[in-house]
Length: 470
Image (cartoon, rainbow, N blue to C red):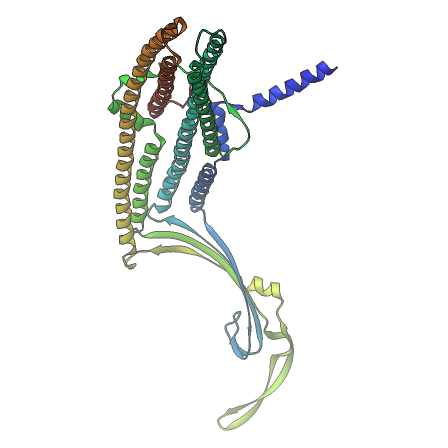
Protein backbone atom coordinates (compact mmCIF):
# COMPACT_ATOMS: atom_id res chain seq x y z
CA UNK A 1 0.00 0.00 0.00
CA UNK A 2 2.81 2.38 0.86
CA UNK A 3 4.52 1.57 -2.41
CA UNK A 4 1.30 2.35 -4.29
CA UNK A 5 0.89 5.72 -2.56
CA UNK A 6 4.52 6.59 -3.29
CA UNK A 7 4.01 5.67 -6.93
CA UNK A 8 0.89 7.89 -7.18
CA UNK A 9 2.76 10.75 -5.50
CA UNK A 10 5.64 10.47 -7.96
CA UNK A 11 3.19 10.31 -10.86
CA UNK A 12 1.43 13.49 -9.72
CA UNK A 13 4.72 15.31 -9.22
CA UNK A 14 6.04 14.24 -12.60
CA UNK A 15 2.78 15.35 -14.24
CA UNK A 16 3.02 18.72 -12.51
CA UNK A 17 6.57 19.26 -13.63
CA UNK A 18 5.66 18.21 -17.16
CA UNK A 19 2.92 20.81 -17.26
CA UNK A 20 5.44 23.49 -16.28
CA UNK A 21 7.90 22.65 -19.05
CA UNK A 22 7.24 25.19 -21.79
CA UNK A 23 8.23 24.98 -25.43
CA UNK A 24 9.08 28.05 -27.50
CA UNK A 25 5.66 28.01 -29.20
CA UNK A 26 3.92 27.75 -25.83
CA UNK A 27 5.90 30.76 -24.62
CA UNK A 28 4.67 32.66 -27.68
CA UNK A 29 1.06 31.76 -26.86
CA UNK A 30 1.32 32.76 -23.19
CA UNK A 31 3.07 36.03 -24.06
CA UNK A 32 0.34 36.96 -26.55
CA UNK A 33 -2.43 36.11 -24.08
CA UNK A 34 -0.84 38.21 -21.30
CA UNK A 35 0.41 41.17 -23.32
CA UNK A 36 -1.58 44.35 -22.68
CA UNK A 37 -0.46 46.02 -25.91
CA UNK A 38 -1.83 43.17 -28.02
CA UNK A 39 -5.11 43.37 -26.15
CA UNK A 40 -5.28 47.11 -26.84
CA UNK A 41 -4.47 46.55 -30.51
CA UNK A 42 -7.28 44.00 -30.72
CA UNK A 43 -9.62 46.60 -29.22
CA UNK A 44 -8.37 48.93 -31.97
CA UNK A 45 -9.50 46.33 -34.50
CA UNK A 46 -12.96 46.37 -32.89
CA UNK A 47 -13.05 50.18 -33.10
CA UNK A 48 -12.18 49.96 -36.80
CA UNK A 49 -15.03 47.49 -37.30
CA UNK A 50 -17.43 49.93 -35.66
CA UNK A 51 -16.14 52.80 -37.84
CA UNK A 52 -16.83 50.73 -40.95
CA UNK A 53 -20.28 49.77 -39.70
CA UNK A 54 -21.12 53.41 -39.00
CA UNK A 55 -19.85 54.60 -42.40
CA UNK A 56 -22.22 52.10 -44.05
CA UNK A 57 -25.07 53.14 -41.77
CA UNK A 58 -24.52 56.74 -42.87
CA UNK A 59 -26.13 55.76 -46.19
CA UNK A 60 -29.44 55.17 -44.38
CA UNK A 61 -32.06 57.91 -43.87
CA UNK A 62 -32.18 60.11 -40.79
CA UNK A 63 -35.54 59.87 -39.02
CA UNK A 64 -36.30 62.06 -36.02
CA UNK A 65 -39.36 62.91 -34.02
CA UNK A 66 -39.94 66.13 -32.08
CA UNK A 67 -42.44 67.51 -29.62
CA UNK A 68 -42.78 70.88 -27.88
CA UNK A 69 -45.02 72.10 -25.09
CA UNK A 70 -45.53 75.74 -24.17
CA UNK A 71 -47.76 77.81 -21.91
CA UNK A 72 -48.67 81.31 -23.11
CA UNK A 73 -50.21 84.23 -21.18
CA UNK A 74 -51.88 87.29 -22.62
CA UNK A 75 -52.56 87.92 -26.25
CA UNK A 76 -51.12 85.07 -28.29
CA UNK A 77 -51.44 83.33 -31.63
CA UNK A 78 -53.67 80.31 -31.90
CA UNK A 79 -51.49 77.83 -33.85
CA UNK A 80 -54.57 75.93 -35.02
CA UNK A 81 -56.46 78.89 -36.54
CA UNK A 82 -53.72 81.56 -36.68
CA UNK A 83 -56.06 84.02 -34.92
CA UNK A 84 -54.95 86.28 -32.09
CA UNK A 85 -56.66 85.42 -28.82
CA UNK A 86 -56.50 86.83 -25.33
CA UNK A 87 -56.36 83.64 -23.27
CA UNK A 88 -53.95 81.56 -21.28
CA UNK A 89 -53.05 78.90 -23.83
CA UNK A 90 -51.40 75.49 -23.52
CA UNK A 91 -49.95 74.40 -26.87
CA UNK A 92 -48.38 71.10 -27.94
CA UNK A 93 -46.72 70.50 -31.30
CA UNK A 94 -45.48 67.17 -32.67
CA UNK A 95 -43.57 66.20 -35.79
CA UNK A 96 -41.74 63.43 -37.58
CA UNK A 97 -39.03 64.22 -40.13
CA UNK A 98 -36.90 62.07 -42.41
CA UNK A 99 -34.18 62.88 -44.92
CA UNK A 100 -31.68 60.92 -46.96
CA UNK A 101 -28.66 62.04 -48.96
CA UNK A 102 -29.02 61.31 -52.65
CA UNK A 103 -25.63 62.70 -53.63
CA UNK A 104 -22.79 64.19 -51.60
CA UNK A 105 -19.74 64.07 -53.85
CA UNK A 106 -19.20 60.33 -53.17
CA UNK A 107 -17.81 61.25 -49.75
CA UNK A 108 -19.74 58.52 -47.96
CA UNK A 109 -18.72 55.80 -50.40
CA UNK A 110 -15.08 56.84 -50.17
CA UNK A 111 -15.38 56.82 -46.37
CA UNK A 112 -16.57 53.21 -46.53
CA UNK A 113 -13.60 52.23 -48.71
CA UNK A 114 -11.22 54.04 -46.36
CA UNK A 115 -12.65 52.31 -43.27
CA UNK A 116 -12.45 48.90 -44.95
CA UNK A 117 -8.72 49.45 -45.44
CA UNK A 118 -8.40 50.77 -41.87
CA UNK A 119 -9.59 47.38 -40.55
CA UNK A 120 -6.79 45.66 -42.47
CA UNK A 121 -4.28 48.18 -41.14
CA UNK A 122 -5.41 47.49 -37.56
CA UNK A 123 -4.94 43.75 -38.07
CA UNK A 124 -1.49 44.30 -39.60
CA UNK A 125 -0.47 46.56 -36.70
CA UNK A 126 -1.39 43.73 -34.33
CA UNK A 127 0.66 41.30 -36.41
CA UNK A 128 3.62 43.71 -36.46
CA UNK A 129 3.62 43.99 -32.69
CA UNK A 130 3.17 40.21 -32.38
CA UNK A 131 6.29 39.72 -34.51
CA UNK A 132 8.26 42.11 -32.30
CA UNK A 133 7.06 40.27 -29.20
CA UNK A 134 8.05 36.92 -30.72
CA UNK A 135 11.54 38.24 -31.42
CA UNK A 136 11.87 39.33 -27.79
CA UNK A 137 10.66 35.95 -26.51
CA UNK A 138 12.91 34.09 -28.94
CA UNK A 139 15.98 36.05 -27.84
CA UNK A 140 15.21 35.47 -24.14
CA UNK A 141 14.59 31.76 -24.79
CA UNK A 142 17.97 31.39 -26.51
CA UNK A 143 19.70 33.19 -23.65
CA UNK A 144 18.39 30.55 -21.26
CA UNK A 145 19.57 27.74 -23.53
CA UNK A 146 22.97 29.40 -23.80
CA UNK A 147 23.26 29.76 -20.01
CA UNK A 148 22.19 26.13 -19.49
CA UNK A 149 24.80 24.99 -22.01
CA UNK A 150 27.43 26.93 -20.07
CA UNK A 151 26.45 24.99 -16.93
CA UNK A 152 26.89 21.75 -18.88
CA UNK A 153 30.42 22.81 -19.93
CA UNK A 154 31.31 23.81 -16.38
CA UNK A 155 29.85 20.57 -14.98
CA UNK A 156 32.12 18.64 -17.31
CA UNK A 157 35.08 20.66 -16.08
CA UNK A 158 34.08 20.04 -12.44
CA UNK A 159 33.89 16.31 -13.10
CA UNK A 160 37.37 16.27 -14.63
CA UNK A 161 38.80 18.37 -11.80
CA UNK A 162 37.26 16.12 -9.16
CA UNK A 163 38.70 13.05 -10.88
CA UNK A 164 42.13 14.73 -10.86
CA UNK A 165 41.72 15.54 -7.18
CA UNK A 166 40.88 11.93 -6.31
CA UNK A 167 43.82 10.56 -8.33
CA UNK A 168 46.29 13.11 -6.96
CA UNK A 169 45.16 12.48 -3.38
CA UNK A 170 45.74 8.74 -3.82
CA UNK A 171 49.21 9.37 -5.20
CA UNK A 172 50.03 11.72 -2.31
CA UNK A 173 48.73 9.20 0.20
CA UNK A 174 50.96 6.59 -1.45
CA UNK A 175 53.93 8.95 -1.15
CA UNK A 176 54.41 9.20 -4.88
CA UNK A 177 53.65 12.99 -5.06
CA UNK A 178 54.37 15.84 -2.68
CA UNK A 179 51.44 17.27 -0.72
CA UNK A 180 51.77 20.66 -2.46
CA UNK A 181 50.60 19.21 -5.79
CA UNK A 182 47.01 19.05 -4.57
CA UNK A 183 46.83 22.76 -3.74
CA UNK A 184 46.54 23.79 -7.41
CA UNK A 185 43.71 21.32 -7.90
CA UNK A 186 41.87 22.61 -4.82
CA UNK A 187 42.24 26.13 -6.18
CA UNK A 188 40.80 24.89 -9.46
CA UNK A 189 37.86 23.33 -7.60
CA UNK A 190 37.16 26.65 -5.87
CA UNK A 191 37.29 28.45 -9.21
CA UNK A 192 34.94 25.87 -10.72
CA UNK A 193 32.45 26.46 -7.90
CA UNK A 194 32.50 30.22 -8.47
CA UNK A 195 32.01 29.77 -12.23
CA UNK A 196 29.11 27.40 -11.64
CA UNK A 197 27.38 29.82 -9.24
CA UNK A 198 27.77 32.61 -11.79
CA UNK A 199 26.35 30.37 -14.52
CA UNK A 200 23.38 29.35 -12.35
CA UNK A 201 22.71 33.01 -11.55
CA UNK A 202 22.80 33.75 -15.28
CA UNK A 203 20.18 31.03 -15.89
CA UNK A 204 17.92 32.53 -13.21
CA UNK A 205 18.31 36.06 -14.62
CA UNK A 206 17.68 34.81 -18.15
CA UNK A 207 14.56 32.99 -16.96
CA UNK A 208 13.38 36.14 -15.19
CA UNK A 209 13.88 38.10 -18.40
CA UNK A 210 11.72 35.57 -20.25
CA UNK A 211 9.06 35.71 -17.52
CA UNK A 212 8.94 39.50 -17.73
CA UNK A 213 8.71 39.39 -21.52
CA UNK A 214 5.80 36.94 -21.19
CA UNK A 215 4.23 38.73 -18.21
CA UNK A 216 3.99 35.25 -16.69
CA UNK A 217 5.52 34.52 -13.29
CA UNK A 218 4.54 30.91 -12.60
CA UNK A 219 7.39 28.49 -11.96
CA UNK A 220 8.39 26.76 -15.17
CA UNK A 221 11.33 25.43 -17.13
CA UNK A 222 11.83 25.43 -20.87
CA UNK A 223 12.18 22.65 -23.36
CA UNK A 224 15.75 22.22 -24.58
CA UNK A 225 15.44 21.19 -28.24
CA UNK A 226 18.17 19.54 -30.23
CA UNK A 227 19.61 22.43 -32.25
CA UNK A 228 21.30 21.83 -35.58
CA UNK A 229 23.65 24.77 -36.05
CA UNK A 230 24.09 23.82 -39.71
CA UNK A 231 20.38 24.18 -40.49
CA UNK A 232 19.38 27.36 -42.27
CA UNK A 233 22.83 28.14 -43.62
CA UNK A 234 21.36 28.35 -47.13
CA UNK A 235 19.98 31.76 -46.23
CA UNK A 236 23.52 33.12 -46.30
CA UNK A 237 23.82 32.03 -49.93
CA UNK A 238 21.41 34.85 -50.80
CA UNK A 239 22.45 38.47 -51.00
CA UNK A 240 21.18 41.06 -48.49
CA UNK A 241 19.36 42.81 -51.34
CA UNK A 242 17.57 39.60 -52.32
CA UNK A 243 16.47 39.05 -48.71
CA UNK A 244 15.30 42.67 -48.51
CA UNK A 245 13.30 42.37 -51.75
CA UNK A 246 11.59 39.26 -50.41
CA UNK A 247 10.92 40.92 -47.05
CA UNK A 248 9.11 43.78 -48.78
CA UNK A 249 6.45 41.31 -49.90
CA UNK A 250 5.74 39.59 -46.57
CA UNK A 251 6.41 42.08 -43.78
CA UNK A 252 3.14 43.30 -42.17
CA UNK A 253 4.57 46.75 -41.41
CA UNK A 254 5.30 47.27 -45.14
CA UNK A 255 1.85 46.07 -46.15
CA UNK A 256 0.27 48.32 -43.50
CA UNK A 257 2.13 51.33 -44.87
CA UNK A 258 0.92 50.55 -48.40
CA UNK A 259 -2.65 50.41 -47.13
CA UNK A 260 -2.16 53.69 -45.25
CA UNK A 261 -1.15 55.26 -48.57
CA UNK A 262 -4.41 54.04 -50.11
CA UNK A 263 -6.34 55.42 -47.13
CA UNK A 264 -4.62 58.78 -47.63
CA UNK A 265 -5.77 58.75 -51.27
CA UNK A 266 -9.35 58.10 -50.18
CA UNK A 267 -9.11 60.91 -47.62
CA UNK A 268 -8.13 63.24 -50.47
CA UNK A 269 -11.18 62.09 -52.44
CA UNK A 270 -13.38 62.71 -49.41
CA UNK A 271 -12.00 66.22 -48.96
CA UNK A 272 -12.33 66.93 -52.69
CA UNK A 273 -15.92 65.62 -52.67
CA UNK A 274 -16.94 68.53 -50.45
CA UNK A 275 -16.56 70.80 -53.50
CA UNK A 276 -19.56 69.15 -55.14
CA UNK A 277 -23.19 70.17 -54.59
CA UNK A 278 -25.17 67.85 -52.34
CA UNK A 279 -28.72 66.70 -52.94
CA UNK A 280 -31.05 65.28 -50.35
CA UNK A 281 -34.66 64.12 -50.20
CA UNK A 282 -36.74 65.10 -47.18
CA UNK A 283 -40.24 64.41 -45.92
CA UNK A 284 -42.10 65.03 -42.71
CA UNK A 285 -45.39 65.26 -40.88
CA UNK A 286 -46.52 67.59 -38.10
CA UNK A 287 -49.59 68.45 -36.04
CA UNK A 288 -50.46 70.53 -32.99
CA UNK A 289 -52.88 71.07 -30.18
CA UNK A 290 -54.01 74.33 -28.54
CA UNK A 291 -55.91 74.47 -25.27
CA UNK A 292 -58.10 77.41 -26.41
CA UNK A 293 -61.77 77.52 -25.58
CA UNK A 294 -63.89 77.75 -28.69
CA UNK A 295 -67.73 77.69 -29.16
CA UNK A 296 -68.89 74.15 -28.69
CA UNK A 297 -72.75 74.58 -28.75
CA UNK A 298 -74.92 76.98 -30.78
CA UNK A 299 -78.58 78.09 -30.62
CA UNK A 300 -80.57 79.66 -33.44
CA UNK A 301 -82.00 83.02 -32.34
CA UNK A 302 -84.09 85.68 -34.13
CA UNK A 303 -82.36 88.99 -33.83
CA UNK A 304 -84.07 92.28 -34.85
CA UNK A 305 -82.10 94.73 -36.94
CA UNK A 306 -82.88 98.25 -38.20
CA UNK A 307 -82.29 99.03 -41.86
CA UNK A 308 -82.40 102.67 -43.09
CA UNK A 309 -83.40 103.19 -46.70
CA UNK A 310 -83.92 106.69 -48.10
CA UNK A 311 -84.25 108.06 -44.64
CA UNK A 312 -86.86 105.56 -43.70
CA UNK A 313 -86.12 102.96 -40.92
CA UNK A 314 -87.29 99.41 -41.46
CA UNK A 315 -87.33 96.66 -38.83
CA UNK A 316 -85.83 93.36 -40.01
CA UNK A 317 -85.74 90.04 -38.22
CA UNK A 318 -82.73 87.72 -38.93
CA UNK A 319 -81.84 84.28 -37.61
CA UNK A 320 -78.26 83.72 -36.42
CA UNK A 321 -76.34 80.90 -34.74
CA UNK A 322 -75.30 82.16 -31.33
CA UNK A 323 -72.75 80.22 -29.18
CA UNK A 324 -74.17 79.16 -25.89
CA UNK A 325 -71.30 76.98 -24.59
CA UNK A 326 -67.50 77.13 -24.88
CA UNK A 327 -64.86 74.37 -24.51
CA UNK A 328 -61.53 73.03 -25.70
CA UNK A 329 -61.59 70.80 -28.78
CA UNK A 330 -60.51 67.25 -27.78
CA UNK A 331 -56.79 66.48 -27.99
CA UNK A 332 -56.86 63.69 -30.57
CA UNK A 333 -59.47 65.51 -32.64
CA UNK A 334 -57.12 68.49 -32.94
CA UNK A 335 -54.16 66.25 -33.77
CA UNK A 336 -56.15 64.63 -36.56
CA UNK A 337 -57.57 67.90 -37.89
CA UNK A 338 -54.22 69.75 -37.81
CA UNK A 339 -52.12 66.96 -39.37
CA UNK A 340 -50.03 68.06 -42.39
CA UNK A 341 -47.40 66.38 -44.61
CA UNK A 342 -44.50 67.71 -46.64
CA UNK A 343 -41.80 66.33 -48.93
CA UNK A 344 -39.22 67.77 -51.28
CA UNK A 345 -35.65 67.95 -52.49
CA UNK A 346 -32.89 70.03 -50.93
CA UNK A 347 -29.87 71.18 -52.91
CA UNK A 348 -26.80 72.66 -51.23
CA UNK A 349 -24.21 74.34 -53.45
CA UNK A 350 -20.91 75.22 -51.73
CA UNK A 351 -19.90 78.74 -52.64
CA UNK A 352 -17.77 80.05 -49.81
CA UNK A 353 -17.01 78.31 -46.52
CA UNK A 354 -14.04 80.19 -45.07
CA UNK A 355 -11.69 78.14 -47.33
CA UNK A 356 -12.41 75.06 -45.20
CA UNK A 357 -12.76 72.78 -48.22
CA UNK A 358 -9.66 74.16 -49.89
CA UNK A 359 -7.57 73.76 -46.74
CA UNK A 360 -8.88 70.24 -46.15
CA UNK A 361 -7.86 69.25 -49.67
CA UNK A 362 -4.40 70.74 -49.14
CA UNK A 363 -4.12 68.99 -45.79
CA UNK A 364 -5.03 65.66 -47.44
CA UNK A 365 -2.34 66.19 -50.09
CA UNK A 366 0.25 66.92 -47.40
CA UNK A 367 -0.83 63.76 -45.58
CA UNK A 368 -0.12 61.76 -48.74
CA UNK A 369 3.39 63.22 -48.98
CA UNK A 370 3.97 62.54 -45.29
CA UNK A 371 2.84 58.93 -45.73
CA UNK A 372 5.27 58.52 -48.63
CA UNK A 373 8.11 59.67 -46.40
CA UNK A 374 6.94 57.35 -43.61
CA UNK A 375 6.87 54.41 -46.03
CA UNK A 376 10.37 55.24 -47.23
CA UNK A 377 11.66 55.49 -43.66
CA UNK A 378 10.18 52.09 -42.76
CA UNK A 379 11.72 50.50 -45.86
CA UNK A 380 15.10 52.08 -45.07
CA UNK A 381 14.94 50.76 -41.51
CA UNK A 382 14.06 47.29 -42.77
CA UNK A 383 16.94 47.37 -45.24
CA UNK A 384 19.38 48.43 -42.52
CA UNK A 385 18.15 45.71 -40.15
CA UNK A 386 18.57 43.04 -42.82
CA UNK A 387 22.00 44.33 -43.82
CA UNK A 388 23.13 44.30 -40.20
CA UNK A 389 21.60 40.86 -39.53
CA UNK A 390 23.19 39.41 -42.67
CA UNK A 391 26.73 40.57 -41.98
CA UNK A 392 26.35 39.76 -38.28
CA UNK A 393 25.37 36.22 -39.29
CA UNK A 394 28.41 35.97 -41.58
CA UNK A 395 30.65 37.23 -38.78
CA UNK A 396 29.07 34.86 -36.24
CA UNK A 397 29.51 31.98 -38.68
CA UNK A 398 33.24 32.73 -39.03
CA UNK A 399 33.57 33.17 -35.27
CA UNK A 400 31.79 29.87 -34.61
CA UNK A 401 33.95 27.95 -37.10
CA UNK A 402 37.12 29.52 -35.68
CA UNK A 403 36.09 28.49 -32.17
CA UNK A 404 35.51 24.93 -33.35
CA UNK A 405 39.04 24.78 -34.75
CA UNK A 406 40.41 26.34 -31.57
CA UNK A 407 38.64 23.72 -29.43
CA UNK A 408 40.07 20.90 -31.52
CA UNK A 409 43.58 22.28 -31.08
CA UNK A 410 43.13 22.90 -27.34
CA UNK A 411 41.62 19.44 -26.88
CA UNK A 412 44.72 17.87 -28.42
CA UNK A 413 46.93 20.05 -26.21
CA UNK A 414 44.94 19.08 -23.11
CA UNK A 415 45.08 15.37 -23.97
CA UNK A 416 48.86 15.65 -24.39
CA UNK A 417 49.32 17.45 -21.04
CA UNK A 418 47.02 14.92 -19.35
CA UNK A 419 49.13 11.98 -20.58
CA UNK A 420 52.31 13.71 -19.45
CA UNK A 421 50.68 14.42 -16.07
CA UNK A 422 49.72 10.79 -15.70
CA UNK A 423 53.34 9.84 -16.56
CA UNK A 424 54.68 12.35 -14.07
CA UNK A 425 56.36 14.62 -16.64
CA UNK A 426 53.85 17.48 -16.16
CA UNK A 427 52.57 19.03 -12.96
CA UNK A 428 49.01 19.86 -11.86
CA UNK A 429 49.41 23.53 -12.67
CA UNK A 430 50.16 22.79 -16.32
CA UNK A 431 47.18 20.45 -16.49
CA UNK A 432 44.87 23.06 -14.89
CA UNK A 433 46.02 25.74 -17.34
CA UNK A 434 45.32 23.43 -20.29
CA UNK A 435 41.95 22.48 -18.83
CA UNK A 436 40.98 26.13 -18.22
CA UNK A 437 41.98 27.08 -21.75
CA UNK A 438 39.81 24.29 -23.14
CA UNK A 439 36.86 25.26 -20.92
CA UNK A 440 37.11 28.92 -21.90
CA UNK A 441 37.23 27.90 -25.56
CA UNK A 442 34.10 25.75 -25.11
CA UNK A 443 32.29 28.62 -23.40
CA UNK A 444 33.30 30.98 -26.22
CA UNK A 445 32.20 28.41 -28.78
CA UNK A 446 28.87 28.08 -26.97
CA UNK A 447 28.32 31.85 -27.10
CA UNK A 448 29.32 31.96 -30.77
CA UNK A 449 26.98 29.05 -31.59
CA UNK A 450 23.89 30.69 -30.09
CA UNK A 451 24.74 34.11 -31.55
CA UNK A 452 25.11 32.42 -34.94
CA UNK A 453 21.79 30.58 -34.59
CA UNK A 454 19.99 33.76 -33.52
CA UNK A 455 21.29 35.76 -36.48
CA UNK A 456 20.35 32.97 -38.91
CA UNK A 457 16.82 32.75 -37.48
CA UNK A 458 16.45 36.52 -37.77
CA UNK A 459 17.24 36.35 -41.48
CA UNK A 460 14.81 33.46 -41.96
CA UNK A 461 12.21 35.45 -40.04
CA UNK A 462 12.52 38.38 -42.46
CA UNK A 463 12.12 35.92 -45.32
CA UNK A 464 8.69 35.05 -43.91
CA UNK A 465 9.51 31.89 -41.95
CA UNK A 466 8.17 31.52 -38.39
CA UNK A 467 10.57 31.58 -35.48
CA UNK A 468 11.39 28.08 -34.25
CA UNK A 469 14.33 25.91 -33.19
CA UNK A 470 13.44 22.84 -35.22
